[in-house]
Structures are given as structure tokens and as C-alpha cells.
Length: 166
Image (cartoon, rainbow, N blue to C red; front, side):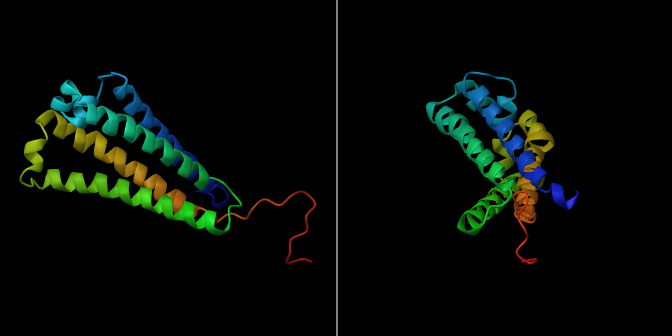
């Protein structure tokens, strides 16, 4: 990607997070499509209160916070503590998503006792083919956004002379 366009990774990561939040809010409001392949048929059918509150509303809310972080990573001209905090949060989200996506993929594919039993055959396919790659995509987008954050010079107001020229 062109070096002056690195902010696009932040917008892509924000879009990823908003889409994932939307799916969780859809499920929290009673939507069924895709929930059994994501959470398993038992949780999808029973929808216990803890799952709806934490696993659907809570995760959706965390995704929106992630979208705000990604939006911050798309900004130019951020400096100091705010820059360090956004960079750290971006790398943290990237690591969490990559560990989740790659870790579960490896555990399922290696047939670790207990993990394979907890995931039904239909859920296993969608976890390997859709959900884990989705987490990995999010992790890669956040990593690219964090890596490229702050590499562009801050925009100068029109007419301002660069300090090196003064």
C-alpha cells in the first residue's frame, strides 16, 4: 500500500469491528442466523442470560470500543501519550484476535482432548472455515493499522513553513 495511505488500515480495522459488533447485536436481539455455528447449538437454543449479556451484548460493545481504537489509528498528527496508548491498544487488540483465531484453529485441528468434544461437527466446519479466519483477518488489520500508525507526517496548515526550513 502506498505509504501516504497507511491510515486506510485503521478504517479497514474499524469496519471489521463494526461488522462484528453488528452480528453480536443481531444475535442479542434474537437473531438466529449463524449463531449456532458460532457459539454452538446448545447456547444458540438456550440463550442463557449470562451468554446474552456477556457473550453477545458485551462482545458487541467491546467490538465498538475496538472500532474507536481503530478509528484513532487512522488519524494523523496524534503525538505523545495518546499516540503511545493508541499504538499499544492497537497491538493488544491485534494480538488478542490473532491468538484467538490461530489458537482455536490449532486446537481443533490437532484434536486436543475436550476441545474437539465441545465443538459439534457443523460448528467445527464453520469455526475452521469462517470464524477463526474472521478473527485472523481482524488481527491482521489491527496489526497493520498499529504498525503504520504515525508513519505519516501531520498535515501542516496552509502557509506554515516547516521547522527545518526556518
